[in-house]
Image (cartoon, rainbow, N blue to C red; front, side):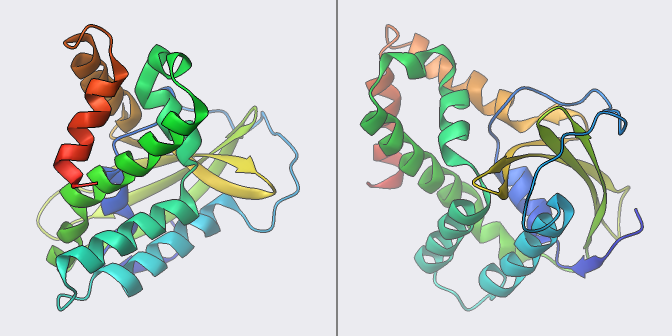
Length: 212
């Protein structure tokens, strides 16, 4: 890891918080498979920008909890492809609901994650988030990074990104080789299956937790 560092690794916390999207990419990717795309900035720069914004907007300890959660959701809106995320974490069940229901689920998912994780941003102290190199495989770009802790070994984080409308968006996060998307999908699939394959049961549970 040779690129820029930031104190208070907000983007790393998003990785840990955002347990979602797309198939696992724990297998190392080859840099000799390159897809040419016309984008405004590199994938690594997008991750760095996300981290910088998270520090600015989420780490102020004086923020009210509801304000921090709203800022967390806004950050996801800017940097994550939530339609892709939502379809993946619903697994095969996304095909059984309407587009409006998927859009509603995406909002609930964002608020559920914000409720669980946004306030952890005020706990950072002395860590660093290091953005490293990027590689490409087919239509996706993988950005390597590390969460460097003063009291333990670094945590390796890989961001899977894809171009949408000439801009990179995050579609998955792998922490030490584990796809966060698969983890969340397994949790949600279990809830749906326990309710006779009824997706509305999951939606109702998320509404109850988030108050939406």
